[in-house]
Length: 420
Figure 1 (cartoon, rainbow, N blue to C red):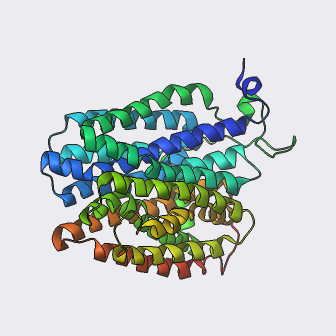
Figure 2: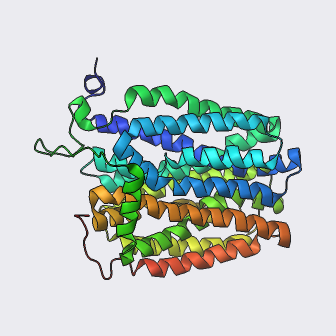
Figure 3: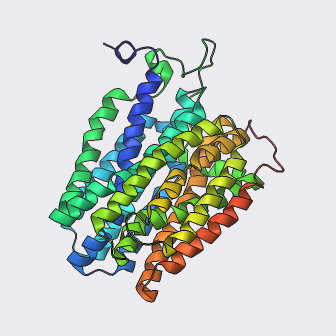
C-alpha cells in the first residue's frame, strides 16, 4: 500500500507531523548541554567556561551548517540529508559516554552534533514549507518553529530529573536512542517531493507546476546565494535582528537558565519545570505568531516580539527567584521565545523568492546561532570571572530592545527580488 493511499489525500500533513517530531528531537539534543552543565562540572571538575565553550561550539556549527544543509537538500534530497544528520547526532552523543577530557566534549557535543543538528533546524522547516505547502505557510512555519523551541524547553525537566537522580550518562543514552529511533521512520515515511507519491502541495490546484530539480554543487549554491544577499540592506537587517534572537534565546536561556536558577537557590528540577512552563506557552505563542504572520505586517510583529523579550530579560535578574516569583517571566518570555521565526521567514521569502529564500534564510539562521554561541560563551565567562549572570541578562535585554526598533526599518526601502 502506497503512502498516498495509506495517509489519505493530504500527505503533506503527515510530512509536517514527521518533521515536527524530528525538529523536536534535535532541539532536545541541543538543549542537553544546558541540563548537564552542572553535572559535568561536578563529575569532571571542568570549569563553567570550558563547558560553555563546548556548548558555544555546537551552537555556532548548528547555525553555520544551515545554508549548506539547505543547498544539500536541494541537491541530494531532504531524506538523505536528514538521515545523515540523525546518524551523526546519535553516534556523537553515544560516543561522549567515553569522554575524559574537555576536548572530547568539544568534539562530540560541539563539532559533530553541532553539524548534525544544524541540518535539522529552521532551514529544514523553510524547505518543507516551500516544497509541500502553497497555503497556510505562516501557520505551518509557526508550528515548526514551536517544535524547535518547545523541544529546547519541554525535554529539560525530564532530562534534569534523570541527571539529578541517576547522573549524566543515562541522559546521554536517552538522547542517542531517540535520534537512532527516528532514522527508520524518516527512511520509510519521508518522500522527497509531493509529485513522487502523486500528490500536489497542500493548497495547490491541479495546474501547479512541477519545480525543476537542483543539480548544482550545494557549496557553490550556498555561497552564490550569500553573494546576492549581502548586496541588499534587508538581508543585513534580518541577519542582525536574528543574531539578537539567538543571543537572547538558545545561547542565554537555553544554555544558562538552569545554572542561573541554581545560583539563586532553586533546585534543578524546579528550574527545569520553569522551562517546561515556558515551553508550553512557547508552543502557543509561536503557533499564534505563524497565524498572525499570514494576516499582519511581519516587521511590526518583530517589533513587539523583540521589545517584550528585552523587557522580560531586564526584569529577570531582579525577580524573586522562587518558582512563583518567576511565573510572570515564564509566561511573557515563553510566549515570545522564538515567535520571531515565522515573520522572519515570511520577509525572507517575500524579498528573495521561494528558490533563494530558504538558502538565504539558512545564512540568516547562521547569524542567529552566532548570536547564540556568543551569549553561551560570554555568559559563562561572566559567571566564571564575575560570579554572577546579572550583566549577561541585562545586556541581552538591552540589545533585544534595540533589535525591536531595527525591525521597523526592514523593508522600508524594499525592492522585490523574487527572480533571484
